Length: 365
Image (cartoon, rainbow, N blue to C red; front, side):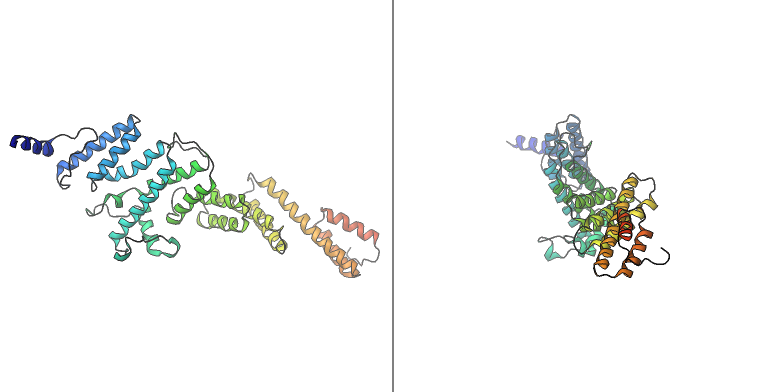
């Protein structure tokens, strides 16, 4: 019996770690444990090369169970979500990465002392990003990779690559748009506006300096335009021009803002100001990007705006004529001919002058 106990002790202490089997909870400060965690990571990567993703996920989880403070744990935390993506389980991967960011935020906030002890279990700092300066600061630290990796007290949750997690979420968002993502090989691409909108908003609130931020901001703005929420679309496109003015996406923002104002001009009480705003943004787009793919369409819209304004002037002239205010009618007709010479309203206005001799045109006419 004693020999059996001795053999078991020696096996636990010095036995090799084969496959995904890890024997017992070791003292994490010993070099032996570090070597074992590396072997476990090698086994995980071997399973991934064999495309056995389910076993690889199980092996990564086992590594995290016994080696929570190792450098390999940083990799395992993220790879679990990435393997779920490769399996085509985008919803599960999305949920996993959201939780992982929350854990990383909490772990980092504790190190910097910005979390109150009585609130750590109930909610985490940064839940209301817009009203929380401390929360924004933590996310900036993570985005720029400024957390002190030399600090031995820092857990793998703190030292994880925040940008890599965001990139994975970004790829999931693109898959919900029906866009191709090489990292997500087996998932069926389909459009789900609500899902990609949620992911893009989540990333932009926490990391406005992320590499794909301009693309996401542009897509959110276009989605508002597609849903005919024109005022919200204008706000989103303006964010694009202010925050990402040097991006390629910002070059088209003035065109889309002009289109939104043109759509809003059809509503009661908004016509004149919105037509003016649309005209300003269309002209700005032509001036800034004369060779734009929208240049021809912009010119057509400007002509439409001119015709709308000319028709509005003609209605005003007819109102003066009904009131027998011939002098006022003549002044407005003169302005109509001057500013809108090629419009249909000008042709009709000239016909009115010929038909009604009472209209008092200015001397120059």
